[in-house]
Amino acid sequence: MIQQSSFGIRRTWQAFLSISLGMLLLVSLIACTTTAQKRREMAETHLNLGSAYVEAGDYTAALRELLAAEKDAPRDSKIHYYLAIAYFGKGHNELAAAEAERAVDLKKDYPVAYNLLGTIYYAQGRYDKAIEAFNKALADVLYETPALTLYNLGKAYFRLGNFPQALKKYQEAKEKDARRELLPLIEMEAGKVMYAQGNYAEAIIHFKMAVELAPVLVEAHYWLGETYIKQQKNKEARQAYETVVRLSPSSEFGLKAKKILQFMDT
Image (cartoon, rainbow, N blue to C red):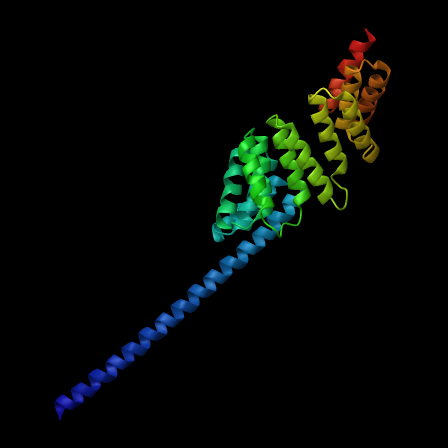
């Protein structure tokens, strides 16, 4: 009788322990879930603020928010994408490349991140790597802005001296540029290709088209002046350089144009 009573008490105690452990496990799971959810929410808040600062061009503030977001969600590809933009905006190209690489490593179908990665590689002078990244962006059939990447691809081929491929990509970019937002830049870059090949007449056609589409495109005016010099059309060249100085006297091209005008006056 005593043995049966002891056995019953032991079974009751074991059942109690099982229920208690189960309850503790459930509470722990709920607590973990709640903590993870809170961290996710905090990461989203920091990401939203960080991306807003990126759009505003305040990269220091953006980095503060995005690095906080990364602590709570280290495997979020979007956070690494915006970190890459912020670092790139501050001129930290190696850090930017590392973050962009991390973004596409975490999310393979991320064309805008591949385009960003290619842009960073281009800025580093790694043109082969840039072309590889741009082509990965273009491989995504759902990519919404292929014109920009095709334009970037053309610039990379130009830097490698592959002029036929550069012109081909500029033409493809023109065909994809439904809103014609990139057209002035495409025309200018096509003009540079012609200039590099010594085809100055065709270069002038492209540069003129560029400045007609975007009268404030200083670089196109500058290259128009350079091309007129090659053709020994000093009057037209002077007009182009004077336009550069008038539009942007303190810019890189404005300062160059000033020196050329001073030389022409001697």
